[in-house]
Image 1 (tube, one colour):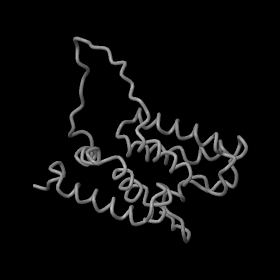
Image 2: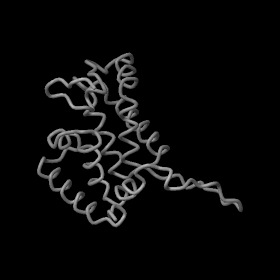
Image 3: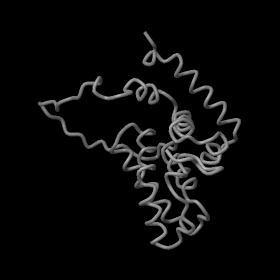
Image 4: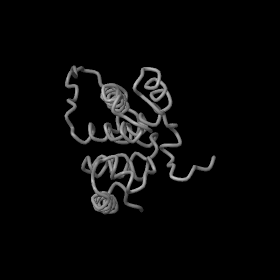
Length: 176
């Protein structure tokens, strides 16, 4: 693994800075460079691959319209759009299920790694989950997380403490 430059996090190293997103080429370059990282973050927030893809698509659509206002590295701005979109809960779920007599095959929970952790994260309130994902999965500092969520560093600390306290007592994560 290569060393990070001073002031660079793992998230920003995965997505090199784009000097301008004002033109289509700059935006396309950003999307190609950061789509994997954005999809991973979206999956960690939603726990559903289809919802994660929808969240990334919505995020990038909003970033496209705001591209002329973005100066410097667009990753923090786009990440903020994503977390705000996720936390707002404005997105409607698709309710077009069709009943059927035959149930589809299910996979066993044992085949999925970290299933208990995903379920425990799902039990957290949206803002607490967003703080945990940005801090521990995207490896952002408290200050970077605060900027991404447009909250104070103190709020990041308190939300992190509350989330970790809930995770500590969550029966899903109980060590036998």
